[in-house]
Length: 525
Image (cartoon, rainbow, N blue to C red):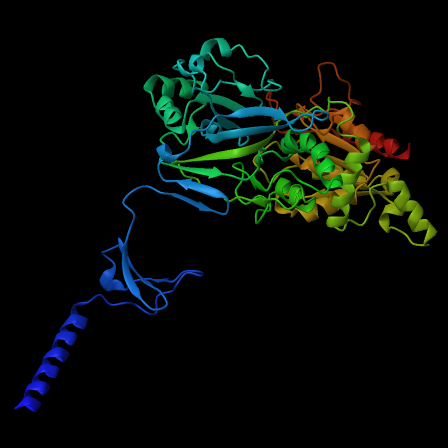
């Protein structure tokens, strides 16, 4: 019967289709599809086969496999090489001064940057040291088996061509302050060179162990990039070593409304310009230090090397002592501080006298600042560093004296517990600051002109106290240190618990009273 045969054939077809569907891989339609992608994730039944995915087109479906060879991927102007030998050979150039009239800012081309891992284990820790892989075809350099070993110390090297005694030992240039030079013909050549046992031992001896050591992948940034390098653990050093070098260039870029780099990368501190609230990062953010340039996120990966088509290097320590004339001027520092005063909504103007005059013209008062001399104190007692013992007792006794009835004594319990805005406010409201020597004094940039600063400790070594900086601030500075032999009871000095420079200390009541008298006199001038 033809009708019966047709029904049997249809049934067989349906059974075959059912068997096919029951044995086929199931697609999880609830799995997310990445934005801009037409690829769906497979369900659990396909989890063991990572080499396949099902790609949907408008009218078709096809199976595609994973690539069998290493490929170069590019995203957001970064090329990702999953094998170093896939890279196009590079020949480094530079450094060239970006602005011959200023100095300090250098441009390198086709270089790679590494991290000094030993510096993170030093006491104190150092986060501003980098290695620079410089690619060359110079056979004399490439024949040097120590070409990839960084010099032990680059401090004091001002510029790429500065000579170092270590050049005779290693047979190559050392680099410049904060940037240790290494030479190679390629990434593979550099990675092979530093992995040699004798070179590894030498780097360990020099405190120059680099990361990465064994390179598997390379990230090549094709857009001009600024290397943000600073010491995370010391804001005072960061401000003078990095910012004082960069400020003149920052002003130039702002005046011309053009920054020469498109991105910023910081191996010192991740997320410095985006989400990190570190004191120094907050300052950079508030002054819009790098214009429209975007911060590049980086991963701490011991197998990935970061390389750059163009790298701007702000020489660490170039203006630490402000000894390059006419670079950081009073007008420039004033402009920088004015921006911070506005951004942090500080109540007192930078020019204290102008603030008083404006208040008088408006028939208003600045509160207690018109009637009192406000001095803020900090003894560091809640930290693990140097502590000023019995400071509170000295202040309590001074408050009881008639001659200090117009002096307002204010103590700060823990500066590290304050936000940057709160620190800025406390310094801005002070007429004088007397504190244990330390990085918290970097907040001096928020104080009004004419403020008196006093740092106290057994041994005081201060960048803030540089007379050139105080001149730029229109302020005065005093360091109070350990009492010397033969010092009389009226000497303004401290009595230390030990011979160590960072020892805890105290001060006699007479010495403290003389200190306050001197500060009040300085403010009356």
